[in-house]
Length: 412
Image 1 (cartoon, rainbow, N blue to C red):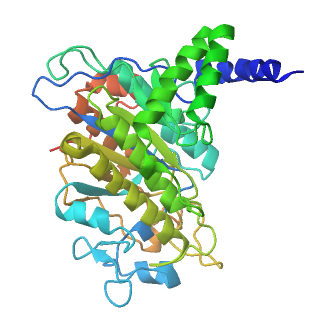
Image 2: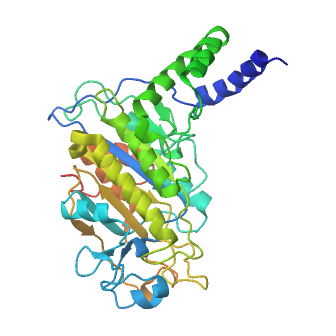
Image 3: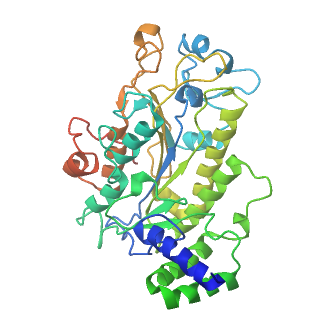
C-alpha cells in the first residue's frame, strides 16, 4: 500500500468521525445567536468536572461544628498557613482559587451548595450520564440537555433575529451535554498538533479530490484553529493538567469572543476522583482547583467586553463523602457545589439551604445531603440568560422535571 492509499483510508475513517459528530477540527461553522433585543449579547459556558468534585473541600462549611472532625487532616481552616478565603462567616473558599474569590467579591461569581442531580447512586458512568443527558435516570444517552436547549431557544422578543444554530464543543470528542440534533462546531487544542501549514494544505488538496465534503470541513476546521490558536497557545514542555485547563479555556474564549463566534459552549475537565491523597489547602485537589481557577480567569480575559454578558456554570456528577477515608481521600458521595461565574451573574452570594453535617442529617449517614436540584440551577440560567420557557425546560430540555422549578435571580 503506497502513501496516498494509506491517507485515503485514514480519510475515510476520519470522515466517519467528523461527519458523525466527533471533533477532528470542526464540523461546520454555522450561523450564530443574534444579538438580543435589549442590546445584550448573552453567552453561556458549561464546564463539566468529571470524577466527582469534593464540594466540602472546595467551599468548606468552616462554621459547621461537625466539619473539621469529618474532613480531618484535609479540612480547611479560617486562619493559619494556607487559610481558606472566607466568603462569609460560615463558608470558606479553597485557597487555590483567588481569581474566583476576586470575582465573588466583585459580585460576578456565586456558589450553590448542597446541590446534586437526581441521581443517588455512586457510579461515575451513570452519574455523568444523568448530569449531561438531563434525564432523571441513567441509560438514556441519545442527546444532551444543552443541545436540546439550543433547539428550544425562542424566536420572540428576547432573542432578536435567528435563533442559535450551533454551539462550541471543546475537546477531541463532543461532550454528551452537547450531543444531539442541533449542530455544533468542535474545537480541540490537540487537533493536528504537529501539522505545518504546508502539510495541512496537502491534506486538504488530497481530500478535495477524494472526499470534497471532508475537504470542506477540514478547511473550516483549520480556519477555526487559526482563530483559536496563537503563540500563547503553545504548551510549554512538561506543562501539567492545570496549565492545560488554562490553554483550553484561552482558546475557547477567543472563539466565543468573536462577533460571529458561538454564544454557547461546553467543555469537560477530567481527574477529580480524589479517593486517596486528596490534600487539604495544598496537594492534588489544590492543583486541580488552581487549574480551574486559572481557566475561569482565562475566560474573563479572553472574552473581553463579552464577559459582562457571560455566565459560566461549573458542575460535577456528584460529591464526595463527608468523612475522609484511611488514605486521606474521600469516596463517592452525593451533595456538592455548583459554581457560577461571569459578568452576567448576580454574584457575591452563597445560595444554599444548608442541611448540616451531623450524622442524622447526612444522606445515608455518609454524604452531604442535597437540598437543591442541579436542574433548577441550569433551568434558571437558561430561562434568564436566553429566555427558554418553563414548559420547554420541563418537557424537552430536562424531560420529566416539571416539579423542579427554575431557580430565579441567578442572572443580573
